[in-house]
Image (cartoon, rainbow, N blue to C red; front, side, top):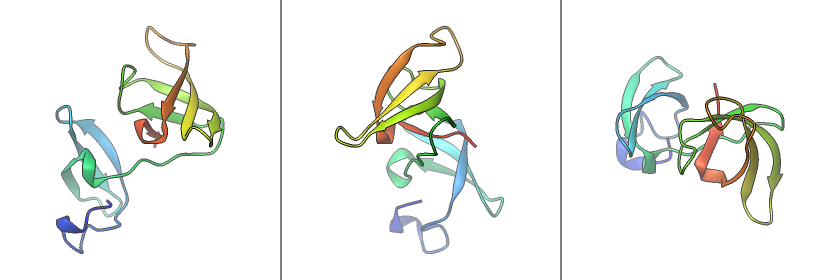
Length: 103
């Protein structure tokens, strides 16, 4: 959690998005077991090591699971290969903030 406005108890806490509540907020289970509803502006994504699973959290492929193929540091983008759903196998490029490590 990157927002200080939520209080010192939550600031810099880590957790996992369990489900999306609407287009802009999700239910997050914090490492201490607390479940909170957070707006997307209060959290940041995590980029795993190459070959690990990610979840696309924004854009046309939102909700799709994908494998991290490479990182384009010059464009601040991730090169992913969709690993589930009807677009399985498709190669896509998304900004860093549009995908996160899948826990």
